Image 1 (cartoon, rainbow, N blue to C red):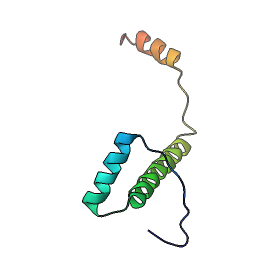
Image 2: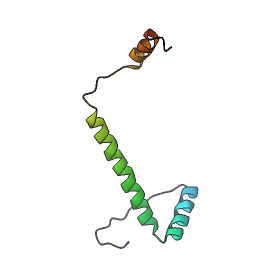
Image 3: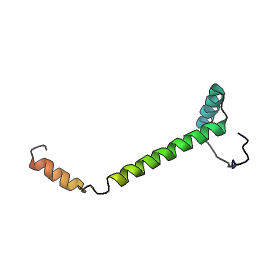
Image 4: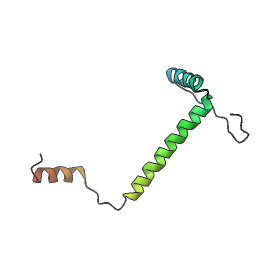
Length: 78
C-alpha cells in the first residue's frame, strides 16, 4: 500500500501478536498495513454502532441496580 494519501505511523506490537499478523499477511497475500487498517476500520465501525445504540436508547427510563434488586425481591424473584 504505497498510496500517496497514506500516512506513516510507528506501531509497537507484542511479539506474539506481531507474529500472528505476519503469518496472516503471508497467508492472505495482504500487507501488514492492510490487515491493521482493516482491523482499525472494524473497531471504529463497532464504536459507531455502539454510539448509535446509546443515542437510540437515550430516552429510556433509567433503572438503578438497587431498584432492580428491590423490584425482583418484591416480585418473589430473589
